[in-house]
Amino acid sequence: DVGQGLPDHFQGHLPPGGDTLRETALRDPLTGLHNRRFLEEYVETLVATARRKSHRISVLMIDLDHFKPVNDTYGHDAGDSVLRAIARELAEQVRTSDLVIRYGGEEFMVVLQETAGNSGEHVSEKIRFAVANLEIVLPGVVLKKTLSIGVANYPTDHEDFWEVVKLADLSLYRAKQEGRNRVVMHQASTLADTGTGATTKQPG
Image (cartoon, rainbow, N blue to C red; front, side, top):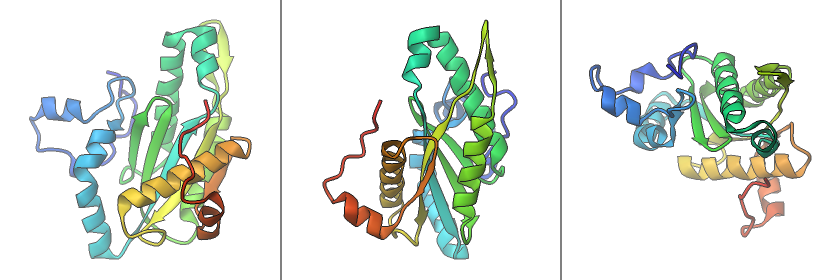
């Protein structure tokens, strides 16, 4: 079971029991985390709940720094082990009511519900610190990795959830530009500096 040891996040929004094929389709087979399809299917529920309760949602876009050299040096099995270790650590650092997603490749997303003040930044720094201090034991080697994290909030930064995802991704891009292993919060002035034509493609 690739998801063994992971908290069962977001149970309240899973399909009714017994639909194992559907549940499998909403999970990343490598890490056991939910996948992007899960987010696409349940984003309306997320947003409706936040609106009804007047709660804020913090979106964390997370990229594993310098992941390609792991595959190149130690092989893809080692790379897969690193991704599983990062997934477990992300899940352990947030509440079971929050959502942890493998967004694609070495990119993850965390959706924090009911955030206030600077709690999104606080949790991001907690995640970054935990991963930076995580020892990933592989055959013959112990690796340590770091994360770059971009954060934006719904609805305070934008009233469209997917636009908030884009803003968090822009902040992630800036975190990588500024040296990686850091958290960058979205700020309107920062977006203006970036320009509307800014790319969100991440450096390798």
